[in-house]
Amino acid sequence: MSELDLIRWLQQRLGKSYGPLIHVGLGDDAAVLRCPDDRDFVITTDMILEGSCFLIEHGLRRIGRKALAINLSDLAAMAAEPVAAVVSLAIPRSMSLSQVQEIYEGMIQLAQEFGVALVGGDTNTWTGPLAVNVTLVGAIERHRAVLRQGAQPGDWLFVTGPLGGSILGKHLNFTPRVREARRLLNLVTIHAMIDISDGLARDLHHLCEASRCGAILDSTKIPVSAAAYQLQDGRSPLEHALSDGEDFELLLAVAQPDGQHLLEQQPLQDLGTTLYHIGECIAQGVYIRTATGELQGLPPLGYLHQLAN
Amino acid sequence: MSELDLIRWLQQRLGKSYGPLIHVGLGDDAAVLRCPDDRDFVITTDMILEGSCFLIEHGLRRIGRKALAINLSDLAAMAAEPVAAVVSLAIPRSMSLSQVQEIYEGMIQLAQEFGVALVGGDTNTWTGPLAVNVTLVGAIERHRAVLRQGAQPGDWLFVTGPLGGSILGKHLNFTPRVREARRLLNLVTIHAMIDISDGLARDLHHLCEASRCGAILDSTKIPVSAAAYQLQDGRSPLEHALSDGEDFELLLAVAQPDGQHLLEQQPLQDLGTTLYHIGECIAQGVYIRTATGELQGLPPLGYLHQLAN
Image (cartoon, rainbow over all chains, first blue to last red):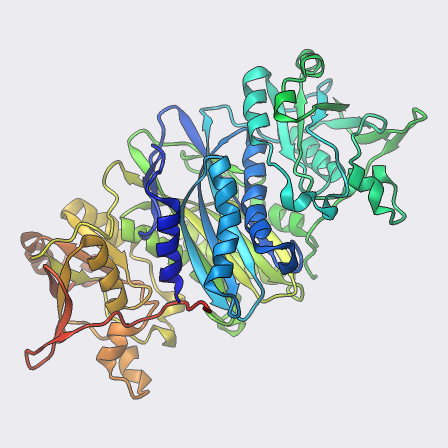
């Protein structure tokens, strides 16, 4: 069994049903994407690693799914529509072709759900642990990509779902908020958006830093997931909601009238998604208002990869 | 030190000098590429792994350089012009920020040489060895991407340089044949092209399989590198030239009149590159003509990653 067997299997598994934006798919030195006339391409990449982002015991399909899902979440944060992905694998030598196919099956199922064409990749074996890298390309109407910058004082802040405790399962089976973002793009003017991968507090800091503004969160309005209550590790459920990574909900800022509209209409209900109004943007500083009405500074809690000095 | 320090350093190091095709670069959830009107985008990805593709002793700059160079070689094989790259790193926990910067320095130097904008990435630390993944996007005049398919019986086969023994050094410091491919695209009609990453014999088989044709190589015309003579490991220099991977020269097929033109004009000499006419395409079968004129079957010698059963 070799990487060629894997490529042949993939070509059969995927069929020839590429969309109009894919001119050349799997199997050449590179894929060719037709540039649409009225849209830009958006590109993002994410790598997940055995031991730090997943364990083999989580199941190979779920690992493959996660590798694509986290990239879809980044596209959602730009309000882009998924187009094509390339996949690189570093495979432990003990792993069989059928196990590698399991990783791909998890990815392919999600890819089909979100209209992503798998157009290329790189398969390597080594003595190290499993590493999966996905690079995802999406399309966005020209000049309409939603950035982290653009939030303004007075804007309302929303999140697309409950937060905290994703380690108990959500980090492996979350639904990337692509459909939600696409619909919001057409309903309101999204001033700024980010997906919550490092933790609400930290990603809010990212958004505020890029937008050169501040924010106040209302602790009583932050949706805390049931999983955050289950953890019972000495930190409060709210702390988990503020600092746990990998929830992959969207955090967005819109002008107040748009915010009121979203709150009243809840236009994502048919997707199973509730919009939670959790705070406002201010000129500077990042704070949280406690249940008793007190304002406290909110540091950028959350996850960061640390490098040695 | 955290991944944020690395991103800040990268932003300062790279400056704001993005070209016209880069609308949003480093630092958001994804980068935004402006789609050109008259061109398509080409996308390729390659991962290199400590232990199998490089050793830390090779030097971090050369490792970073190689990670980008192998992707540039894939773009060259499509005759595309490099545009933008995203980089994912799996970094051993013992590695310092300055060591990671060394990897990037090697990459940035080559990126600037070839006009590649680094527009995003993902930085991870773990207990495993070093892994570097680069995804590269290029642009190609619409409908002009050169594929592996398209070679026809009677075509002349060329390679862009001597082959074999790259393990002695070339695999780390080769010059990707991007400029050569771009010039050839404008001089002749390239029927099919591939970069020699797995070995001449194997990559010739890939080209023939995609083109549904065969080929005869002339053993006396294959340029054998000095390194292939130095190896002295029981295999002949010609065997090394036929089967060693990672030479990253281009193998291309053109019609005979174009071939004669290339051979007489040697239009890549000012780039330091000689075109070698090494054989012809035929209807089927892949052969090599020995020095005594005998035709022998040429199996797909070369490197493949093997997966367990």
